[in-house]
Length: 80
Image (tube, rainbow, N blue to C red; front, side):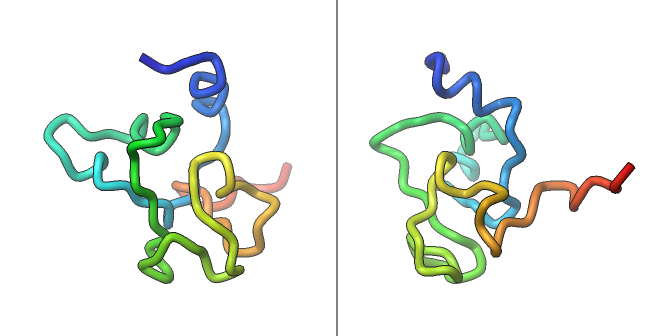
């Protein structure tokens, strides 16, 4: 179950380069990219390490639009 902090992340865009082993397990889904879990290991698909191309650590909280390397799942929404 997601905590209050985790459930608020469900409304935020997810970087398509953020990966976790939980995503590749039976029943894995995008919810695994927003769960705050100290036992989860996250990595960036661009660098294949725990830091992104901008040399900052990756996690559901850290991988957001403020980072130059951020690429939302589904692409950038059109500007209205």
